[in-house]
Length: 337
Image (cartoon, rainbow, N blue to C red; front, side):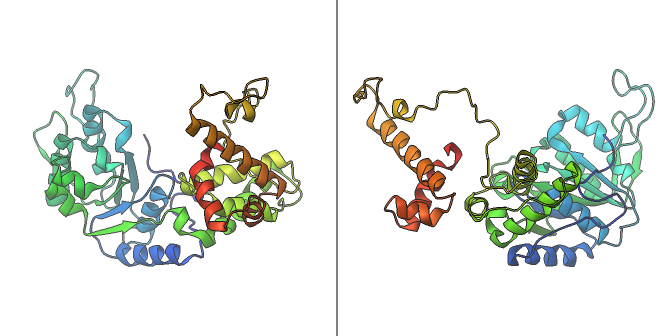
């Protein structure tokens, strides 16, 4: 694994961060402030919120910006491999260790070490990280001499480390050392004003990649669909959805947003059968009522959205629902629409 690679910028330059919402600007202000304080920081956020990008910005806004920025995804490695990756190893430390190898702590000396998914690190490795953070020294795997380093630690996770420490799954001493300050990345659903803004940004990037003449226009219904989605995958999901929409549009106006690329066109879509009607049109009492009601609600939601160009207020009116009632149903079945 190499030094950190992040989207949208080259190493050594300030990473791009885009947004106009209050939640986004507030986070950037807090990040800029703590970047200047040479202490460990925890970044907590859902998947796809940009924890890697935030860590990179923190590094380049710090006094260590000319030093190395080194990253390690702790979730991708077993305990033994993770320990070797972090602290290096001596010759003969294990089968295949034919020469001394420096670890990520040494590589980050004078700079920043970004530990992604730190909540998945074993208690044994946590103990060694604690010593390295607290005293700036550690031993390579298979070694007995101490190695000195001066690296700033930035940890990232979507786990509740405080609860994990209470349950004995994360060392309280390490949590204390890592949490000089804790930054919470806002999820995309808390950045409503940024959705259309980011969508246009990603659409422009895809337009350049496909060498289209102009950035496709989003219909009002398409924008409403983007704004109404809950975005469990956050910015990463938005980027994929928008780029896929631009690619499928062929440069034309984007009327409809396809959120789920796994929709199988060859799978039976007979809503009446899903709702419990047999080929004769008679009700099938062998299908539970709750399943029939669910299928009917999904069918009517789809039809109303299609007929109104995915304008949710218009769809609510067509179904005789208030907007809040419609939104409640939409959220309930959004993954099936």
